[in-house]
Amino acid sequence: MNSQFSAFWGATRYEFVMQARRPSLWITFAVFTALLLLLINQGTSALNVVIPALLKQESLHQVFASWALYVNTFLPICLGVLLAGRLPRDARTKVDELLLAAPATQRARLFGKCLGATAATLIPMLLVYAGGIVYILSFAHSPANVLLAVPQALLAFAVIALPGVLFVGAFSIACPAVIWSPLYQFLFVGYWYWGTLWFHADIPNLSRTLLSPIGLFSAMGIYGLNESSGGNHPIHITGSPLQGVASIALLLALAVGVIFALDGYLRWRQVSR
Amino acid sequence: MQVVLHNLTKTYGGRVQALQGVDLTIPNGMFGLLGPNGAGKTTLMRILAGVLRPTQGTIQVGEYSGNTERGRTQIKRMLGYLPQDLGMYPDLSAREFLDYIAILKGLDNKTARRQRVEELLEMVALTEVSKRKLKTFSGGMKRRVGIAQALLNDPQLLIVDEPTAGLDPEERIRFRNLLADLGGDRTVLLSTHIVEDIAQTCQQLAVMNRGQVIFQGAITEMLAAARGVVWMVTAPVGIKPEGEMTIIATIHQEDTVQYRIVAEQRPAVAQGTVVPADPGLEESYVWLMRERSASELIATA
Image 1: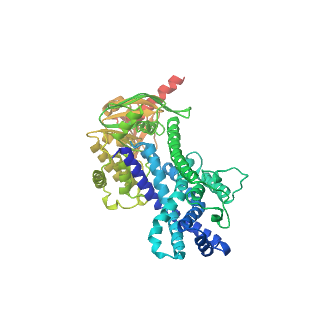
Image 2 (image 1 turned 90 degrees about the vertical axis):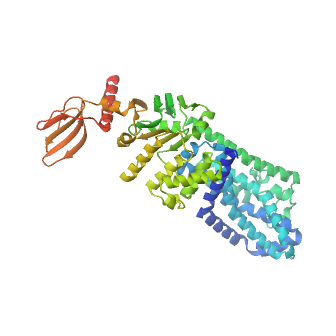
Image 3 (image 1 turned 45 degrees about the vertical axis):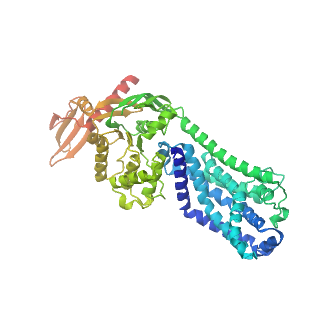
């Protein structure tokens, strides 16, 4: 196996292990999800009201898509915050000197770090999503289709949530190279709140463009969700399947591009130090 | 393998000159790099390890040039590096950490890599605690993990920066012996400000001060340079030797005090005896630094 590919997989594996072992990862997601459920699970927006209503209007895979969109609207806040410390950690623990003295390229390590740490951070998010899917299936009247529903649910998550998660992951790994990570965390949460949860069309941001990291265009274009899909917060956009695919491609390309840019920046910093 | 540095200069932020035109040839075997804190030793080590880039100058390690990307990668393949501030991931076990570093060092074959990790854990006597997380390790145990990671790729060039700092005397001796064994068939560059570590392990050394190499040669040559300037003074309690000198050691006996002194002129003492003594490496080092300071003063004047 090529040494650089081996280094990439090695970094992916150990970054995954290190991130998954962080107690704060599990605590943050548990607290955030509990708060979220407490806030939304009331009155007409309660899940036991919304889900049966959605199941009457839409197909099962569309309901999965709605849930994936919902999860991806809120939980990336935790993801971005929890990934922000991964790069500065190498300097803080002083491991960076050993890493730089190894023949593996920095680029292979950075891609491995991004993929491994993001994948580990994705686990609690996937668990929340899976919990929702089980809940949705409990309302579905054809239990025989449960096994068929699993791949559908995974596909909905991969199409709607995964590109945005990788996009957020790459930025959250890279940005703390140029700004203090607590500041990045603050700005990230602020931006997410302003751009996603408190959207105002008159203030320019990426949230209603193809670069929307919550997966709006994939949900609209590929799964055919419409304005009513947003429940009490209807989504006032439409998208074609092509736009959905373009949104996925753009998010993934930007995630890769950000890591390339980070590698270039760190090289420049090493030379000019 | 020989390491040749020519006119190596490193300036931080365009102002702080850490290295000033260093010319140094490091032969095969143990080679000591001695100097006070801030002499530029760590900067030199970091440049050799590929962690820092020189502002100017050339680096040749065996057949490879350290001035090109390709050359640096080749050098890193045969390099073992134990930095002064050794960092580790606290959440990994010793075995996991070594496995990760081994992967980054290009040990792609899983079976061979695991075997090498086990060998090294055995060598540094950490097999029994290899599953414990590194955050639970003592300073000495971390140093041992450090030397194990440096040896993963069986390096031809081993760079160790202040390896015994913070170790207890037994650990220090153990570590020195380990390094001396390793120096048999490879180039080991040992940087330290602890003279004793060099005296016990190296035949050749260089002394650095303020970013420059002020001495390079065999230990015997350095000792010879201080012959005639080391004195043993025995004086009654309360009477001190006088003159331009550096007192290296003071030993209180029953009614007298014995001093080891480095001084160009025979020291004066009101009562007692003054006899010339054979210089040790520590005294030679002090003499060298004094001489250097004096010549700098003359040059400034």
